[in-house]
Amino acid sequence: MDLLDPAAFAGGHPHGQYRWLREHDPVHRHAEPDGPGFWALTRHADVRAVGRDAEAFSSEPTIMIADPLEPGDGVHKMMLMADGADHTRLRRIAARDFVPRAARLLRPRIRELAREIVGAVEGRGECDLVTDLAGLMPSYVIAELLDIPHAEGVALYDLTEAIHASPDEERAGPTGAEAVEQMFAHAHALWERKRAHPGDDLASRIVHASAGDRPLDELDFALYFLLLIDAGGDTTRNLVAGGMEALFAHPDQLAELRADPDGLLPTGVEELLRWVSPVVHMRRRATRDTVLGGREIAAGDKVVLYYGAANRDPARFPDPERLDLRRTPNDHLAFGGGPHFCLGAHVGRMEIDAMLREILALPGLEPTGPVEWQRSTFITGPRRMPVRFLSG
Image 1 (cartoon, rainbow, N blue to C red):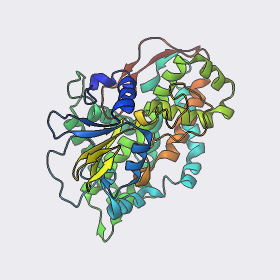
Image 2 (image 1 turned 180 degrees about the horizontal axis):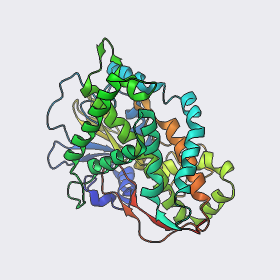
Image 3 (image 1 turned 90 degrees about the horizontal axis):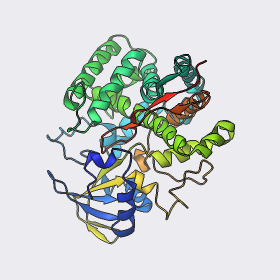
């Protein structure tokens, strides 16, 4: 079995492989063609424990499986790839925009955006649920937080698709490296604008922030910008689209949710997060010799947390292969855990709730063709999902 093969994720998570690993080799030594190999964790208890222990399992130098081509300078770090005090200082810069109170203040605008997005396709009778609906909400929200045009937010999310695409995938548009370069060009323009004309927005706060006693520079801002665009879109877009794909495959659950969205969405969103698990994995580095699941982990070893596997672990979830929108408790790990728990989780939940409400209200909504999934071993979700409905 090969968890580095994008083909294994062509239709979502490879749950058959995960199941075998959980039962037979839950701390699995996985080969890596161009690297030393890594430990693949598939049990909920192990994934949660490692995610919570940033002292023993570091996010530096990267959360990707492959090692960086060049070592960092030790100063400039993306928040996801920083530990301890560095991570705390970087996280604190944007925290005020994503804490529960701030998220609640965004709710009316998020619901308004959802109505606008769905309203724009109501008269057409058909659309692509990913590009015309699910992908627009996070692009618009992060654009407004950063004070950039909606259209630029959409273009930036298109670049993240290129960044996450499999290297062997035939697709139009920029390569991953070219996409990163273009993303940094957008960041440079925003940096220059907010240095000269700061406002009451997230971009201005980052531009004029400090990490400890060091003011952030343009590279710090570019890394923060890339993270916000990328992480700000992945979960919502892939959860809404992947969640609708799951609901189409479970018409009884879909009918119940349509009949009582107010009653079922609070638990339903959490169950869809468990079911879809948009982020495939995060990597950690063991900082000292330790033992996991009876396997000896050496200092420096790569340890990879597979969230989709953890979220189907029968040791944690009764009947985990059953989609149950009323499931409670639901201790899923779709947003990670520990100090790196997703900063935008509260906003993401509101985006998901608002979009599902509006999409579910489209009369006669049904898929009209095969779903095309992203070819990525890092994130998972549909790239294209043609649907039709009765036009308004």
